[in-house]
Image 1 (spheres, rainbow over the protein chains, first blue to last red):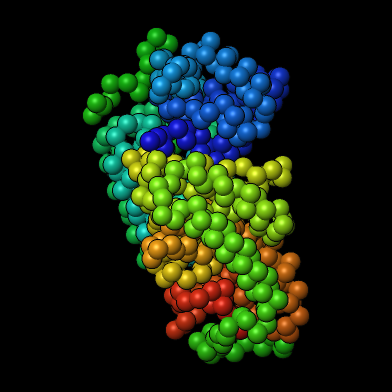
Image 2 (image 1 turned 120 degrees about the vertical axis):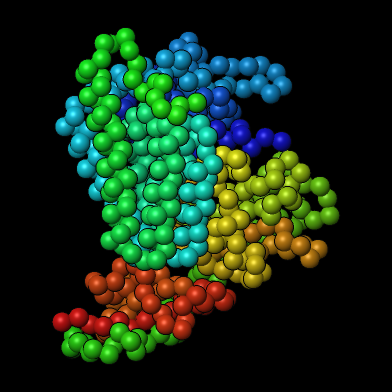
Length: 264
Length: 242
């Protein structure tokens, strides 16, 4: 019995398709989207991809095109295919993942990172405020459960996925499909950057802050809820800026974000 | 409507059943419930008195696809949500299909692994939990259906019982954007500001620019009503601001 075969949920598929980048041939475009998804952590290391027919349907291409795309990814070492019982196609995150993230970070100026923070604060802050005005008790309880799921998440990728899910649920509690989609799109755009240097202590802090946000939503304190969400984004942004500055300081050979305090 | 403000209006907000005014719309939704009864029958036929695997639920697809096709323009998705532990090969399962923007049915995929960070526990979702508890038809929402279409949605849900236990829920999604053209011509013909709201106080439609779908409205004593529905939908007289 396996429910893990549902590697690509409808939500993830939507995230993948939200950032359109179809400059190349169809198989190339599909391979690019999937490799982006792996690099962004939308698809987790070790996760099984759905059967080809299903994945083709979700990506909106023929099975032939999909096979071509998967062959390309196999060559890049981003997926592996195992035959036989328990076989299938599995995601393999690149080994120099942290280095890739640093390279991605290098593409942002500090001004752009600040701007990204402003955008995220606008989306998350407004979502939190509206959720505090509009969420019904069922939705608040669902948010509370998601925070506990975030608290229980151990690996970086699990934490990242749980946190995205939390943001999406806040935006859904705000009754806004646009804010919900925007949280998903921002995630697909920035992906792992936010988690580059999140150690256990940072994580604990983040979970506590999320609990406070849920309390503000539950108690219908819209201003406080927005404030909590904005401060959370501000903390993230400060972390990213700090890291970006380090990238300027260090020699290219050194990878920041590794060996920080509390890292296990 | 004079638009004169009455200070006491907010506290003495008039709330009444939507039935008298929106009869035609509610009748259309009742018809959809009849379709769901057909789907429920099929599920009972498939699931009663034998071991059931996910594969057995494939027999439901023609019925589901038929609902999607015949109610196109109203129904965005339909299927059954299984009682946990009922299927032999999956502790939790939905046989759910939605119509993609391309117009073809696509199976919904959600993470049903309880250990996963994005686990979607549908037993806590209102469209499952409420009909499972009351064993009555229920209209859930409106809400943002972020696991599927990401649209603003209501879900019509009917419990499916067999041999005195709950097999699952048969349900259909109706987008608020499809409902609105049916509701607003009626509401805009009413010569004073009114809000159509769910029994738990969520705005579905309104003829006033001060109220829009998704907002919360206090219904006083009627808040929290989870009785038979869509008959629990209410019309609320709201203040006409200056």
